[in-house]
Length: 488
Image (cartoon, rainbow, N blue to C red; front, side, top):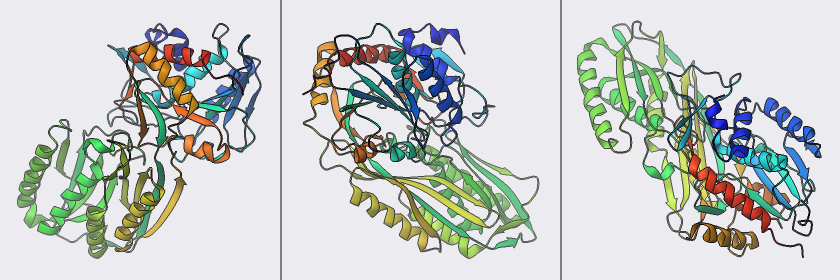
């Protein structure tokens, strides 16, 4: 781990982040980071427990003079999104994140950084370890699996926590205070298909879409970024309609909560169309790149003749249904909020498309701050996929977090922010999945707020954390801890 990260200010925060990032912590595989956090709490001599799903809770009493303040829950999630560039050789299961300083930013070498939500975790660790930071009684809640289902928050039982105020440290702009968020549901379409022998006189091609920015499928969904699955489908649809293109395999995207950056398809065409197909594809490529030249300047689309022709291809009837369904399925912003300016209310990310060995899988993440609108869009997607014979399942549904503009802790944070920065913070709801809404189902009377340092490019290898923002945020946190309201 680079010593330059540990030398950054505030050292308490960055050293804990460096410690954390040395531990592999992919979603669904948090055993090592759970053990790391249990050992951390136990070495401090603080009550430390792991609940039945793997969440870790560490409790620390109030510092002298702060005993009459309300108990607070400081909460962040242990897991991180694992994404890497195609040319990066890295094993997330065994390696710690390789970080470096780039001006005002901390970045990772070709992978996601884990600042989402590692900086929140590191903040709580630094405060638990401190001997000179005044604070009320703290219940530190480290949840698991936030990025791929929020099963940690969903599994947390009532009665585990006594705190009256929850500080969620998972917001990614340091001038924002979040008081609400979107809920989500996974929409998964699957079906089998018959494979056919590749016709004689065919030639094979590999089509690759890459170089897209990707990003967070909630926070970045409104930016007009390219979706590799949608772009690939456009190319395949044209090739099918004009040249009888047949699909052998497709592999596009990765995680539901990441806008897909890459897609690869193996296809065939009749050899007689070889030259015309390449010419036509190049024209479409030029058109797509022109459309995305502002937002996606590094978009690359390659059409390369294969050394060998695939042995089998999709049944043409199913293939036509697949291409038309993906063309029809909504991707991106579906509806803007009528209640909060510039807030995306409902959206969908066509995150993963897999076609191989007679099986199709199309994986979506539908988000909305309005539960009925979430399922309205989910049903629209289900209809598009069922029309070509897919079985469609809804899974992992979680609720949004309804804003409380009369929150007592909101008044505390806005006052401190304005005093420290000479300007009012942006009080917002975000189009991402924060755990507050889920936690609120078992702790309905807990006053909740979310904030954090500036992090850009979350869920992509371009993820980076601002050093100057971390300093601003740390000062904010310390002042908040000293101004938690008195018990009533």
